[in-house]
Image (tube, each protein chain N blue to C red):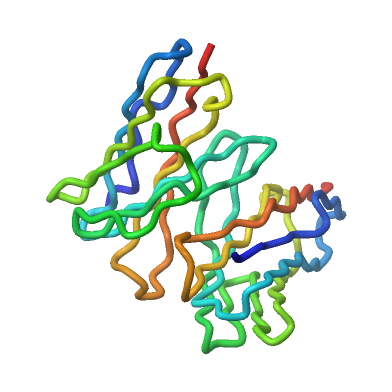
Length: 113
Length: 114
């Protein structure tokens, strides 16, 4: 059964800094890994999807990487802004098993102006 | 293009009652999945539907059920509500099944059971 872990649970950084969010998963037979952000009281917004055959994906100031052999993914945010404050979740879709997506518990990010 | 629409936005029910939540996916999306989000358990997968067929089911009791209609709209039903069913229920849609298309989420239905 896939297990996804995100550490730390919360992170505060000053505006303008670059930062990295971490995601670990146990099942290397992963189909894809997705990163989402969630604002309070809202649903999830898809940020990046990395297919199992890819190593990384980029969108604007965001870059996500995937290393299946080590069971890790990272989300890099460049030049952080107060609007980046949100909870960031990673989720893995496995080739096997009965779950569509297995989510991590998230990292609550606060950008300090 | 309209996003994923979930109705109602908020619900308050009493223990023992049943509830039906609705989800309209993005036009053209055929896969709909449901998730329960609570502070203690985080986001947990409930079930997934594709072309009116349940493809996967999470580890939830039989009180939780769902269905998908021919227009891809989906409903989930919870019977004999318990206090622990209080949660944010999220629906997500994607183009197809195992096609590496990203999931698009609705804003959820906040269910409170008293």
